[in-house]
Length: 637
Image 1 (cartoon, helix red, strand yellow):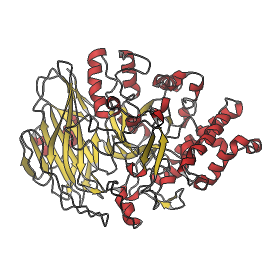
Image 2 (image 1 turned 30 degrees about the vertical axis):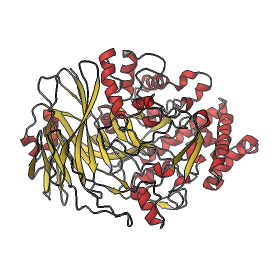
Image 3 (image 1 turned 60 degrees about the horizontal axis):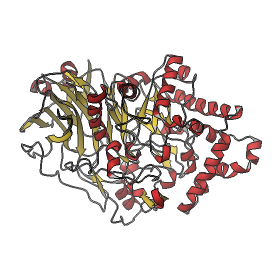
Image 4 (image 1 turned 90 degrees about the vertical axis):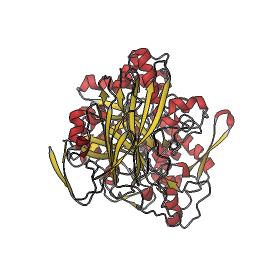
């Protein structure tokens, strides 16, 4: 056990006063200066999805300054020069970072940054060389011309990625640069620089991307190269995740190392990310087991929208409309229909997983969840007050509130995506034994991770059958959770008794108070139907939870839009509860995850309006209600 003294903060694991509810014991915590025994896991914050100048799209949109070294320095809390020519710094440093440059373009960009004399004379490379050398200065002011620049860069990439010896040397040089940067910045126990990349499969514009994360260091990772979809020009199967998984298996066979893949923002996948079929045919046990083995965690929230839930799929969930991007796929080449939504959102994916296991014997969607930014600026920031945008071209400038991107979508329809729809999200939270590559990787594998849209909300979630109020009150709350049950990401043993859950949440020390803790349950009934239900299990400000498990009264709103400010005069610093499922049926497969909501706060768009003395457009959201999502706990008969 480790004894930690916490001074001046309210801790989630001790309760001072009770507010009894119908089927739970929920507590707001108000003790200070507590000494608490904690188990040997610590909460680490990081980002596994950041692109630097070695990604083609990052370079296309003006990143000429922030490479892997600068990305790690920024994550550590150092001041770096952003591509807008402004200094950038995190208010609170991260504990870990994975630079995830695209496997498909990193070697082409490396060659453009290190051109030979012959390449400099090659006409097809001139526009691309200009983009990389000049950065934002080379980006057309007319957004309609962006496609012309994109074609030029793509043409250059095709020319450079020709499979020649020179191309292969460049691919190796780019990969070695990424590995070397991670090795320089990795400081076990203090800061972890994970090694990885992004596998960028986008067939027909459908986002099937995965971030690949290694447990290992340079000695093993440098023996192989990233799996790329460039081969799809010859073999269409290169677009399929099975090809990636075979590549990951090949790495483990060759090196004895370990690696995993993280699917990201499923909301732009046209329903393919959590489909009921595989990419090549009907779902089967082999596919389901293989996917579960390689992909233990998915990205639930990021800049391109939140993928937890959608109002169409969850009409009874008043919080399901959080920063949804639901117009089309990543290029709007396929516009969304209602039937595509189910395979595009995490909650529905979790539900589908229960049905698939019942049919084929394995659950491909038994995954944990994290957040990450998908920043293409090299800056891992999910803070509304310090939001640098998706890419340098939409960084913090007066015109980004009204900037939009129009593309010709399916059937020639013009589809407009407003920059103001970007979400300042998110981060990955990990309960790990120590701050090292191995410990973080192991936490991902056992799914003891969770997602935040940005705030550093500390969340514990345990499930078992014998938890008591003494465990909830105990100084060693978390130790009791491990001792008597399973943490987030775990599986409950079969029982005739209803499971009992212990939850606790502590606000971000520099952020907003908490509104409530909810448990979202999904289950498969004996007639084969999928269901979901939301329970408010701990709420602030002495509000009453009704017999239906919901609180009717909203928490309130203290946001001053004109000043981009709010008051922590409502909500609670911390909430904790012990809750029993009142609708448990031991014959039904189910999952449970927690969602923790903050009180309303100003959105990044409001901070922009105040900082640049602008009027906020009527259609632009002014207020947000940030949140954390835990990985689920499963019950399987």
